[in-house]
Amino acid sequence: MKIEAKKVVVNRSAEHVFDFFNDLSNFKKLMPANLSKFQVIDKDTFVFGLQGMPEITLKKKESLAPEKIVFGAANSPIEFDLTGNITAVDNNSSVVQLAFKGKINPMMSMMVKGPLTKLLAQFSDGLTKLFQ
Image: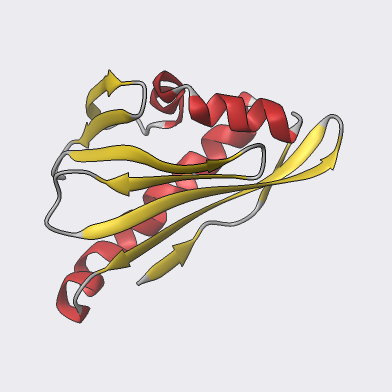
């Protein structure tokens, strides 16, 4: 299953956005209002929980500054990645697109596609608001 959020233009350089994603504590700023838990475990791992959903632990798997950063599921029965693709427009703006890719059976896909799509949209909207 693959879900791509809309591309958003932010008023920051690609390097700035990459550095933002690299500091895991910044993800708390992107979380929706129904956040019930957020904890940075180490420099590469964080966990978050939303009300009514299981906790998700993400670990940094790959980073290609300033274009891409990939987080993978840690301690999850479902294998998935969350990727931030960053494209420089000029020195003061960039385009960001978040993407989810996971190995999920069709039955589970139907159940999680809506909530995951909404979560990625909330992250993208949060980036737009933070970097106006």
